[in-house]
Image (cartoon, rainbow, N blue to C red; front, side, top):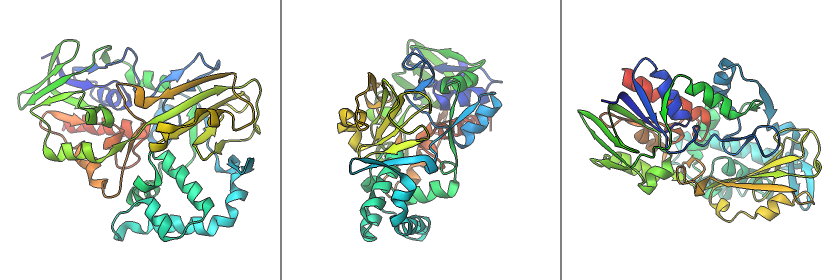
Length: 386
């Protein structure tokens, strides 16, 4: 045996699993030459850490950042949010105020949806004859969930609201998200440039084909959902029907981030974010002439980058488009949950003999977050130690 446990993928989930299993002989196989998965910090674009992938710190990730001695910066304050409306940039709370009663009613309906069959947020909006402002805010919620309103499960929203992990204060890491990844990777043996192509599994253990053949007693599979859906990695024997149903039934649409540097700051210094029809913009640092645009879900396939970059009247001097769907080791933004798919996350997380599964798509509490990935890695490691 090359190891007691082989972990496939050196993203947050895989590194969290390996760290929790540090008393065992653990080997992490990573397809890329870097670690971090969908965490990718850029230190050349703006002169300070810019996040090409995951950026916001919530819940469990914030706790781990404090443990690592990392400092945070505030992010995404609703009090300082703006929205582009009819060619003008307006403060979001006064803009939303006329629709506040209707919007609050929508949220109450979501919270009270547990005793009704699941449906899409779009269906709920139509049932309640939601106005333009409520629909625009709902579209922003869908963008955050990497989908659109017609494929966003109301039961998923209810679960996320009840958990509270994504509804509190958001922040970002001042030193860069990669510093947290490096903290997770301390003491972990990682083979980079080793894309896995096939996993043979039985009661006797696992054989993993990558840059060479590796053997172990057990394995943790942390491949992104879209990579599993594409069949990039073969399994022998094939995974059980419930697992294949879960892989096929969840969604993973594109996620696009656009990094933009301007000649000068064109927005109010206290602007936390700006909601557009096409997506969301935010300044990663209040004093810097830099913005990040974020578009996810079906509309990310046809995102108008020019419209995103010139909404404030002047084009950026430098622009960099990061399309995670074009990354062969990710193939999308992050997982989303259509109506009726809640049980599929649990099925995706279920072990199969010596195979254990982790990654944000296996987490029911706050999928789509680094915290979900870390929590899932710890869960998979605890399955092994038990």
